[in-house]
Image 1 (cartoon, one colour):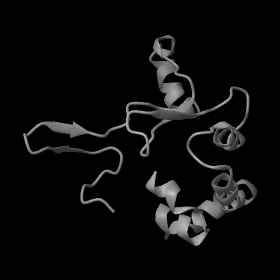
Image 2 (cartoon, one colour):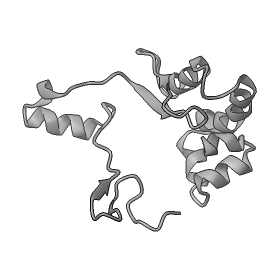
Image 3 (spheres, one colour):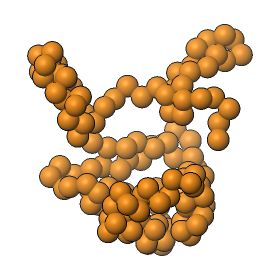
Length: 138
């Protein structure tokens, strides 16, 4: 939907000519090919593993942040559900319950269900499955 190609990995110049980059400088340990490359290069001991969490700026409270903390040993996608449930600042309990049903088919059908959604944007998916507007706004 943006006028810049690249999605999350893009760069542009601001009004002053400074380059702004939105590229992600992380990778996830679940990428076996990436881990194999690090092993082949004999540099896996240089990795700095960070705590698994998502950090959000609170739009309603400027300067305040909240997190989804993923618990070690809990397999995906259950770790994500638990992280959402445990956070008390981002979503209200009714919003959490309203968000869960559209995500259940992903757990049950997996990639097959996800592939069926390819013709929709994330916003269209959210509206189709009745997820609260505030989740997208936030």
